[in-house]
Amino acid sequence: MEPITTSACTLAEADPRRCPGCGALRPANRRRYCSRACARRWADQHVWASARLHALDAAGWRCEQCGADPLELHVHHRLVATEPYSTGCWNHAEHLEVACSSCHRAEHTFLREVDRWLAWAEAAEGPPTRQMELPISA
Image 1 (cartoon, rainbow, N blue to C red):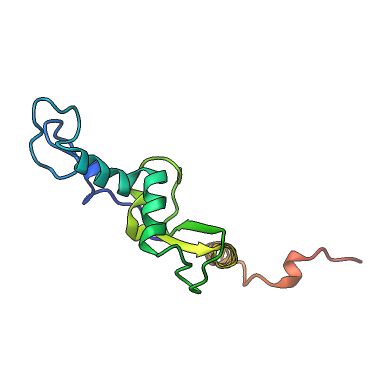
Image 2 (cartoon, rainbow, N blue to C red):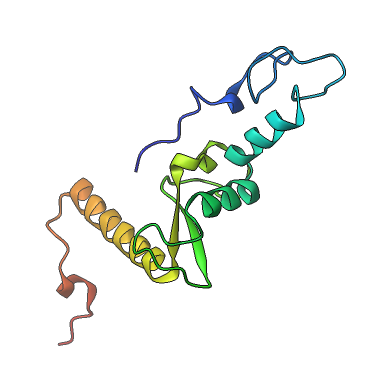
């Protein structure tokens, strides 16, 4: 998995006088953003509920993997996020993918398998086999 970076993100903005949405100097009568449009743009990339709806709209409310339009759609984080439903850079549109429940389940099954193989490679104990998972009866 690719690491979460905030170097190009406005969430890491250090200057309190600037709008985190566009970087412009904030008017004196505004507390955080220079306009409601900047606040909405920022929320669409950082706040989970808003980013989720934005991703579903961008995908046309269809699974991006198989094209199905089921009643139940999931928004999958392509990055490993420590707190995926909180505000953060892991909610950027490029880190989200819309999937139906079967494609989402397949994605997580694949990721678990990759984690298992990576753990094996780090331990260098030999490749995992089905026999290692099953209890051996005498």
